[in-house]
Length: 323
Image 1 (cartoon, helix red, strand yellow):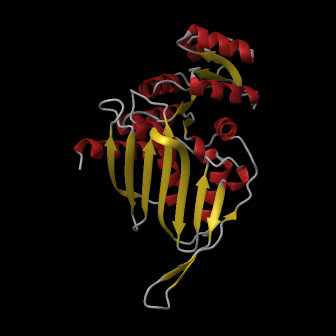
Image 2 (image 1 turned 180 degrees about the vertical axis):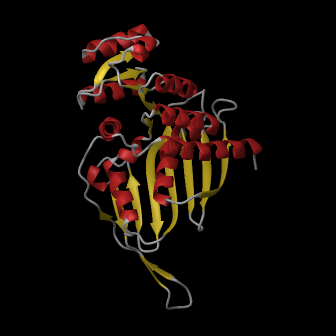
Image 3 (image 1 turned 90 degrees about the horizontal axis):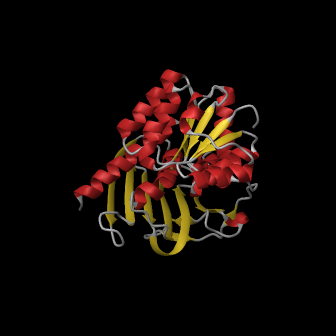
């Protein structure tokens, strides 16, 4: 989307993807990276200049900065950009504490600027359709939700698997639940790097009795990305790791016969929901630009990011306490 110049800060594994998408939308005005070789390669590929962070902050023509930098830098970098009058996109996790998130939100409010968090799967066309299905009552009252995000690697040493993988799933579960969190518990184990959990489970209790469950691991024999939503009138499965786009969203209309002394289930075949294909990251980048253009909050704004970090912070405290 031309007319809203964005500078990409951080051109590593994920920053390169962001830069390409902002470029495709006609918004990329330059790149910043602590590694000159990374910055030069990205700048050459996309035909934009290499900038220093201070240069980008001081240039009045630059309206927004997108940060894909280590999580521990997010809060301070975002505050600097907001103080300079820039709109800010920051990759997940938004920050490493609830307190830091609140400071970022207040900085954005004071500056009158957009603050957006990169919770990518909120922009996946299949999840968007699932969210519509739930909101319309298509599954009836929700009973529970669970999400598995499992793979072999990429291992991290600076953050555990729940902080690395969990923001996606927690963000989706909170969006579908649409009600306040009452309690959070979690368990984790470190098998590969001492002190860094590479397998974790997190349980979220919502007001009204709804439950959510997240299982995350990067020490798993195969890749699985599956979100299951159980309602009184149907069950839905968003399986992002399914190789066929047309099978990524399935709805099951199983029934239970309660007329006898013991409830008897009757399984029904899956009904695959047709969803137009689309690139989630491009949709996410477009949301940021449109929020700036329209002067509105993006779908994954600072408040949404704070809610996710609140759950993660509570989960981390529970893991530290142990069983």
